[in-house]
Length: 355
Image (cartoon, rainbow, N blue to C red; front, top):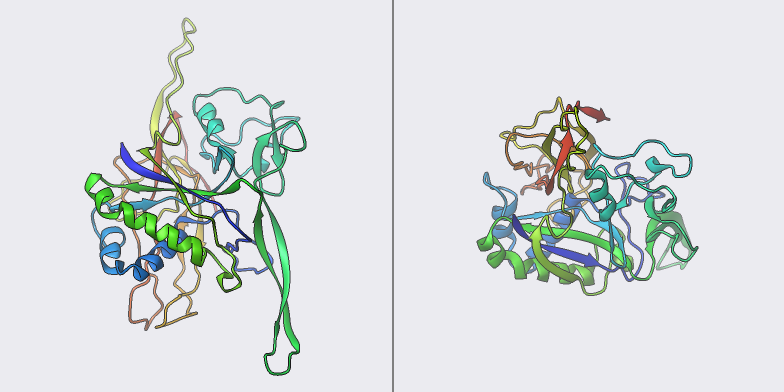
């Protein structure tokens, strides 16, 4: 078990998380781990730690000193997450459209892994945030954020004439809501070396902003909140279901699989059995933010997404490939180091892949 920091970010204004399509009138609901790593790396540059940080986390053949999960929504004490695809959605219900929920509370994940029945009377899906939330009073039956579109136009500084009107989608968070992530350290030496610097990086980013439209003040947060503990016990306790004890029936067989809380780019030595598991993948692109090539398109990389469940013979290492465009004088790493939670999966398990 490793040490980790649970980081809560409470936005003070809109957040812009660009979707894979790049469409300005759409916004993603997850701040993916590769984007979060890029933000933390930019902060490490300002803290004078860039070379050491990259050597410890990106361009190392060994396990990285620090792993970052993607950032998921929370509301008050409820942490939402993309559930393991091997367990979600539950069987169809006449009352709750389970598959409409992209995020569920961590307590629901524990129930799913333990093969406990979800009471459909207790839950509803908030369409705006795609979160599974408690059913009941209207005050509670609202998700932690909503997606909206802000309209604006550039103004010519000389003539004062408004030009280039456009729309930009963003997330607007409720009071007491925000995004959470975890930073997981490889060992005690890694925490001693990087713990305070990781906290400093998040505090710096809280002021400068995460995501897009930072020049407009978007992406800023209140002071980050850090909870230290053992990972993954600080999030869930994923135990195999107890045998049902029915006479004459064999106990069900379970095998441990890896539930991904971050984007994953397989390393050459990762022994993943792609014939099994339940996983999806997406293509990640984006543009370089550097004085040497600002705005240049990064090379596209296909990555396994959060919520995927994969089987492997050993711990997943992951990779951080260089996706810099041709001619750029420095590398640009696409962070694909996974943060995983071991969960029991009933056998047999056959691979299910979605494009």
